[in-house]
Image (cartoon, rainbow, N blue to C red; front, side):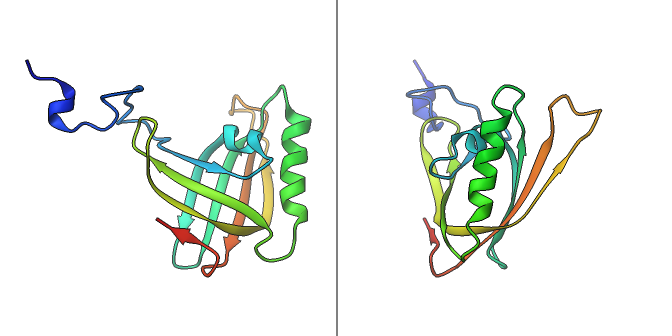
Length: 135
């Protein structure tokens, strides 16, 4: 009898496969787990070595969330904040990864009555291509 493993579908052997999920990635900053958990969108510019991160402010841990953003933003020296962006296969596996050191260029947040969340935070980062490891 045929099974999903016979067709080479990633994640069919373990975990839950989500091939149509938009969020098949994760971004991580050490010590900033709330930013990782609340990230909703990322725009990568591999030519200019920059990315824009969108995150929804949680209602419950809002103060801790803002503290983590402030902590990352306070590091103004180039390449002082470690980051990694993982491209996921829809299961537990990582297909590829960009990791290195970055600095925050700007942070804005949008208050919108039409949005069900508290606020949407837009953070722009740049990274040094020499410090980045792309796998």
